[in-house]
Image (cartoon, rainbow over all chains, first blue to last red; front, side, top):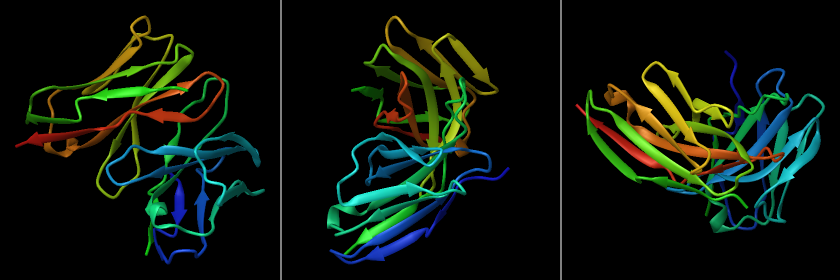
Length: 114
Length: 112
């Protein structure tokens, strides 16, 4: 079965640079979520999109922005990178139905800020 | 907001034994409770979930129980195998929000 695709898998940036992470949800899934996971920590919700509109917002810094496109893929844009932004960034997708809650995670993008 | 606590943080069992991981949540409006398995360098993998209108769910060697009154839910793995070794996260989804709140994770090690 098709899974969530994330690119790139690894990214190294310097402080104050920008980064763009991409997420391609499972086919026919209409909702995308972004999570940040620091070393040894649990995933923290950043932001989600449903049908190309922002749905929920979590602990996403103002330096970050995201959007969902017409083909349902999503991009997380990160500017003025800081050392503390080094983490695993996961995208998850789901099919929003009355009873559908399952979120399926991608393999993640490991961002290292030096 | 929702708060999920997970115990224990580390768990070592002998191959073939059972493993139990427990979580509590704070928001009485939470209605969906998934469990994820995360192997090193990989994304969390949904292994089982339970909704608030169900008390127990089983899938082969894995089972989850939910006590809504006490606001706690547990993961039970029977006949553990070395490939079960991973970090396990519980999570909850509250009300109309679709964002998951995760527990702090349990590092399960199955000793051969």
